[in-house]
Image (cartoon, rainbow, N blue to C red; front, side):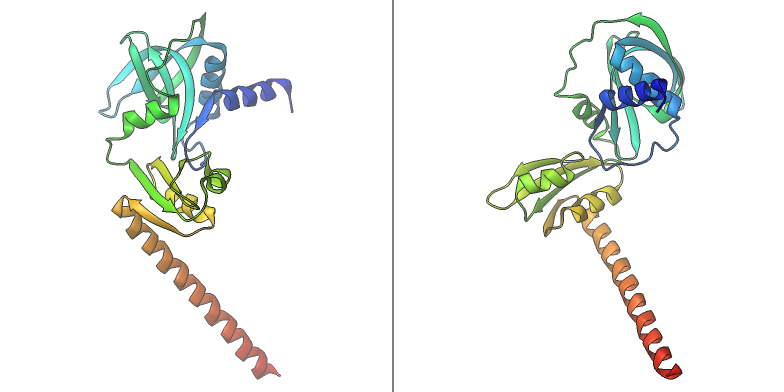
Length: 224
């Protein structure tokens, strides 16, 4: 791998906090990710244009701390120099980030970590789901399987409690399915409905396979 590409990949890995099921970067360009990752790694100020949820476009000058991947979206947690406060910016709303060449001394983030800061900021949005589920498996086993994408706590002998924030219930269903153990959804009720829809879809697919196999057997007998 070329040295420059290797450095970009290493910067992205070192600057990223993942609290979600892995997804593609979607509409976020590779150059945006690598520019911000390198700026986070080097503690270098960045300038970019940003479009708010209301459509307002502003120029921002920030001190980036970490990239966060949450659900299907990427965020950068940074100190906004014009507003004198911490902000999280969605990368799909961010335009042409430019490294300024000016270094800074990292400030203390008012949260446990960058992922928690982002989750707290988007927790009230309609597209965000706070998922909780009791899993019939020890916390250590569950953490080994999906601990990168959810918080796993001990809930008693042989049981654990999963907590996850996501903007897509598909990722919660995938994570719970990947554990390989029985579970009970605590919240949200929408996840119960979502899982029932998945179960019906899989059942139909299974029945379809059985019908095809049955037809193949009948066809083979007819030929003989």
